[in-house]
Amino acid sequence: MSPPYGALTSRRMSTLTVCAGTRADAKRKAKEILDVLQRHDFWPDLCLIKRHLEPLAIAANTVQSDCTRLDVVLATLINLYHQYLNPSLDKAV
Image 1 (cartoon, one colour):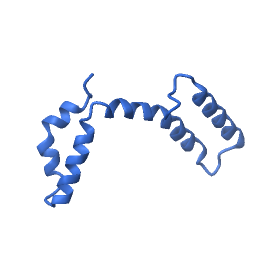
Image 2 (cartoon, rainbow, N blue to C red):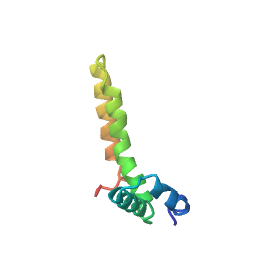
Image 3 (cartoon, rainbow, N blue to C red):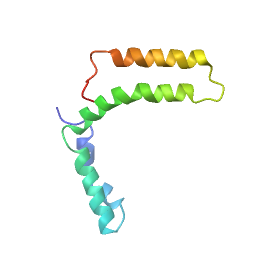
Image 4 (cartoon, one colour):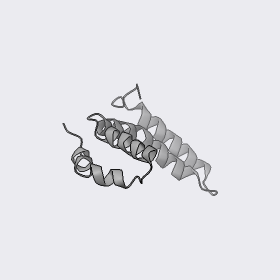
């Protein structure tokens, strides 16, 4: 399976490199980043990581208010426990 954005970065490689500026180190860094985006395993790995980080982001947004009640914190922790108890999640991540 080809990466969903690989074609986009391939077609726009020169345009994206120009956006980095005129300094040689900035151009080199832009090329490194574009090379990572074109790797065949980058996008599937990113989706895998998203499955692990998204519940944590939601939990952080839920409990960060000054007026968050204790029952909301408890429900959030229970939800996280159930999310990460799911056997379909990759334990290596």
